[in-house]
Image 1: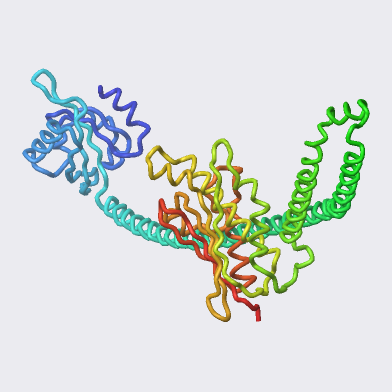
Image 2: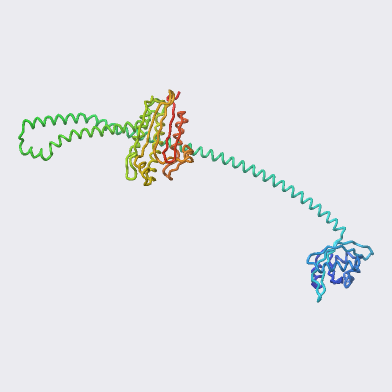
Length: 455
């Protein structure tokens, strides 16, 4: 940087600046330096730095050498001789602009600052720093307080969210239970209606079968008398006898009436089971035969117990004890039997599909069983056990089988409410107990315990 360039640069700066050579010659200054010394800039031109300060030449040379050889700014102190013979102690900061070399002397920029003013500024700076530190502390405290408030707010929001989620889940569960109850009510009405509509014509048919059979037997007796009297009928009659195979017809018609009677009785049994299952006229607590409810549920599920292409027949083993009539909600109890039996059938179907080719597994696959056992525990309680010999349930699943919306079935195959509703019916409606016992690979057992009398 030339002195001219320095002047152009330094002219706009308010700080006292000098440009000196490495030997100490003043090459250029700005107006603040001249004002500090009480001289004009032209008077400073060409002077040596030694002439302007009270420090020894040796000290000044050392300081300038330190500035020339350092890449950093070098701090020093210079005592200026002012024009009025007063001295002014200044703090200096020297930095080399053009490094010294044998070919060229270094150019050193000196920045001067009144020490008294610098000390005052330093005190002011310290005050500002203290104020800033306090402000930082205040802001830090405010941030901590805000952080604490935010944490408390987050906790409150989480608590509120959990409460809302719990309420929403309860509402969803209540809504689903209402839907299930409405479904069961609608199913009961439909089943009762169908049973009623079927029962009337079946009763008519069954009632007339006896008379039809009697009339037919009377006609056959009359025909037999005719055959005895007219042992050689005309050829036209003989041809008709051979065409209709009269001997076979006489033999088969009795079996035909017997078959129709069995079929009509079977329909009557189904109608009775449907009416027993729906229990529309028994919405309130009343005394019922528990076995009738179990049998009606089995009747409804009979089509699922029969052998199919992919599944063998499921055998139902009944071990019924002599039970007293139980005071209960019959329709709801039948719903429990239906849910547990349907789950047992599902488990056995899964077992049949997953069975491998080992002899033991083949034996299990070909002997799918549901065992239903009832017994009186004491004078106050009865127990109903429904067990299958399927794959069983692991402990993790078993601990959740009565939870709402929990299911291991594929989407669309189950709602996860059957066993939950069953649990509610047994425990809350009947003050009973519903338990699940299972060993993986050895089937599952559901045990229902209910009081004989609700009182």
